[in-house]
Length: 484
Ligand code: SIN
Image (cartoon, rainbow, N blue to C red; front, side):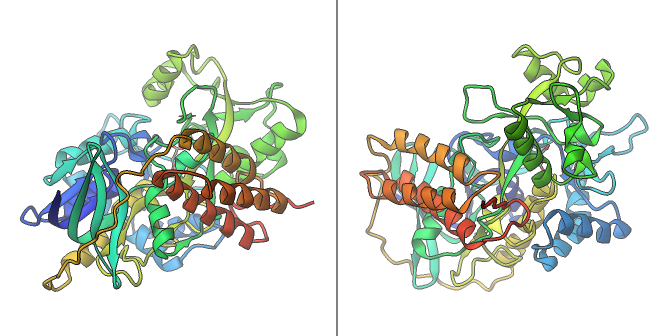
């Protein structure tokens, strides 16, 4: 079975949906997602979306982003991000998105680690992603198709013609003049992560196979405050906005130990806080906690309703109880290499936006809450680029090769678990050259086993991460090497 569209968007998180919202109704557009639409990282985003407050805040936001990113950022992309935020935030509000407001109707801004000022808008208290996702689902006028698992990109002679995917488990070919990858990051590769279970780096793996460059893959971001004592793959995030509002990180004796690592304590950038917690627990054998005891109960429940209720269901009564925390994988700073319009160099008709992309905007460590903003800003630009092209007749070749029947093999599940543990142990918060080399060999061994295509794609991405980590022999941002 095959179908043809003007634009195919892979992924229904904020980047994919905002891209769809920018494309006129007269174009034939298909948005696909692997599972149900709300199984995406956007849905689980808590803290908020950054926006420059005004012209005067742009240079300050740029500086905060670059400092957090260890100046490894593409400055042009950061300037675009910050400047464009003025129009994208206004556009979203004008279309009807309700961010949290005070009693006089003024938008409330919060702060998170490494921001100089309060410039983060939020919704539903601590459910920003969920609210924005719902809003964009309602706004989208194009066809959205769930249960669509993309397992190949159709590329020939420097052009992308579409994808092969299973739709409700049936192999299908979807042709499109332009394909936008908005499939998110790589979270499921790690044993402990905050990501949706659908985010498993398949498309990154296809890119590796096709010789499309991934960039900055050594810079994987670990969120400092995650509750990991649950049986599910996705661990429970405790938003950085909690610390922005004044929560503390303490040990068993209520000591705020992060000041041993950085003078900003809990409000140092995410890489520093995660490493501090990881190191302190390893060194002392003590537990780390997030302490909310300074907050009024009623205020807390109103400001963080989602966290209050989720944790009440597992026996924690916030703000009275402290939450045991660990860092966990959260966000891929690197991704599929593209320019600031999301265009993938050397492949006509192929774009990438959101967490899947690497424009270089995040550098070596993303500034908190820049991700939802990145999603909308670069989605807008990719669509502008697509709509600005003069249309030409495209003659589509026949793509015979199909992997539809070999997506899974018998032992894949065990190998997947093994890979997740290797990624966490050896390509995690603190790395050693010895550990990275061992991970490289183990990944290579798995690639040579009887495995299905989807596992092979995960392993391609894992290889790209370990190779990038080995190539960067000095620590920078979220890539930290501790060699004896
Ligand atoms: C959080 O709410 O702490 C996550 C926000 C982000 O990843 O930027």
